[in-house]
Amino acid sequence: MDRVLSPEGQMLKDSIDKFLRQQYAFDKRRALADSELGFSEENWRAFADLG
Image (cartoon, rainbow, N blue to C red; front, top):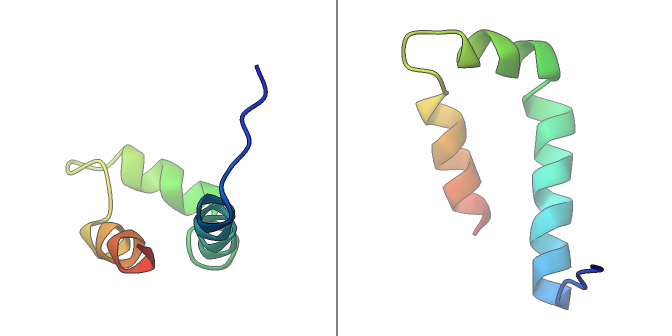
């Protein structure tokens, strides 16, 4: 099933992709997933700011 994003959805996807590439590398995500909390509160706030 192909899913077509709305223009706004595509913009959000692009923003998240860019954020992940620049600020949240895979090794950092893995370390946070293995931490006691399991995620970064700071990054979740940044995701929320993206919309």
